[in-house]
Image (tube, rainbow, N blue to C red):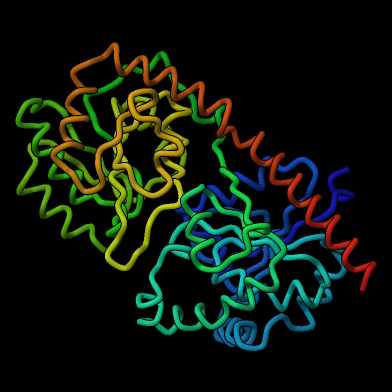
Length: 386
């Protein structure tokens, strides 16, 4: 029975932003461990099972005080009593700053802590972190995290490299691709592909959407019927819409959309473009989940060769890569694939095969559970020696 499965606590300070479907997906396909979510507050976003969820802030002014107390003083008696009743075996924190918050909880429960680093938490420069109160707190806490966590999970080789540069011990770093539901995201042969280039993501600097708009300006001079579809929202949206109005003939901004709508767009668009770049503050991608989703959907990807993206997009096999920030080259790659259906089909088949073999979330979640077992085993051995 599921209740007899060992419990893994999944820690994220805010449960759970709409852009973080990858956390929910990863836990949904666990077969050995039972996930239980813990955080400071609940926010509008991804639905989570209420019987497997605890947050400090349960609403109202008192809830905010409880959240503040939790953040400053750590877990209180209510949380510790509930968690001990669950008997968790391991705590898995997502993102570095969140895992720093989770250290007292893991210590209080005498269970090992592991941390997944996704992007900014390993790539932001020290100067960028020093510029904000949250960043300064994170810098102060990083040495403790390096010492206390038993495993550092990097979502790409690129992120693993950044962790090494920050002094994280090599022997405790493991690369693990999160993966995608290849049954949910799959080619839909009955749906006709439309003349559309698709972008999915937050509208922030590191996503490079301004460069994509410039590239599409070149594409539409040659192929005026091709539309750019931008799914997502963020602080740069208004600036980007203004740029698109000046630059493009056909485009639309849909705003943020649920996973089901993203899947539909991926089944009918011609290409996905991932123009991610390294931002001015150092923020860079780990490996965007949209790449996995597109490949599973049989959608060729055109991207900049940035951060962890080349680990999934193999140039001239599953898609095309342009030199980072070279929007003219990006536009040329988009135009090439838009004009060449046989090449698109070749890349589509290779991308789908790669998704099934390398990025299927069922296989990847099973690998993660093996990591849990290894860490728990080492923790038990170390505890016996003490």
